[in-house]
Image (cartoon, rainbow, N blue to C red):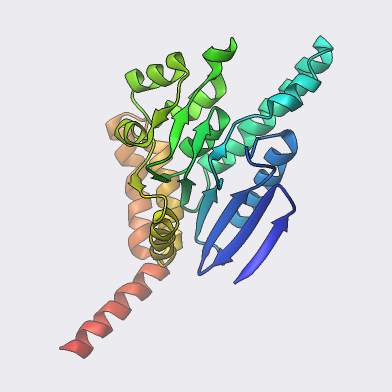
Length: 264
């Protein structure tokens, strides 16, 4: 086991091929500009680390992530020009970080035990999978503050159907774990006591799979999702052929064949 740390913002623990990124920065784990930068750098490091096969994103406590740091934004809004310049920097940096997470070459799992709200829910939606406790809630609260959660909706709308999306965006109120699972935001819901164990078990099993085809398969899935059917098959077919020729797959098949022969 080894540890890398960005003090007070993001910590990273790597065990058995699973990297757990834990959000810090206080109980709300707010996405300040500095937090976004720390998370983006951590993701870049993990993407390049061959020892990491799976990434789990955790925001411990009652709040998984409260979204952007409203106090930080307020400090820059007194001057309109300065405020617009800061907001441009903030939201462009956030979009790039979310793109990195959404296009990550390794499986990503959000582990949610509290409320995921605004850009915090955007984080969850940008991961491949989301495991939650039955205490978790989701929320896009922009309308309750005189605005609208427009950028979080980019990722969230790619997880849920139009009616669920509008309920989140127009109600602005927290919705429970069962609702989130039915809507497509959560894969599995556990008790708070078993969430970490269940997530770790799934992630460790996934870390034992052949990484090459997973990376290429994830990229192909993202690329062909919105293509016409014929174009989707044209894109996926050569990738599938590469899977069967992948050295890692051939090694796995040889080991299975040898084990079967031994049992016979």
